[in-house]
Image (cartoon, rainbow, N blue to C red):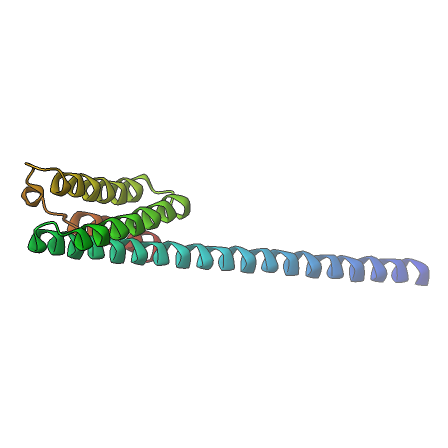
Length: 149
């Protein structure tokens, strides 16, 4: 009998150790998943901030071009700001998988480029279509509220 009790005690002890290891592994996976989710959220939020800042700088550069009568320095600054916006949009495309968000930031980028072409093309009136950021910002806000609440 003592052999059976010893074996049974050993089996129960090993089962307990195995369960403890399984729970620890599960907890580690959950922690890693939470860390990855937090990192992804931070990357998305950072990308949203960068695209909003870049778009606002493009708006300001467009005003400068219109006020200066399309002076070369203002045109150069506008080109740099649109390049920065394009880079920020590319980051959003890489980081965010939501189609509405990508479509909204691409729409702002496309509109900025078309306004730039209209401003720099003789005989065109670029001021007729302002660069509106509110629709993009609304999409970004809705995305963050839906995914980070």
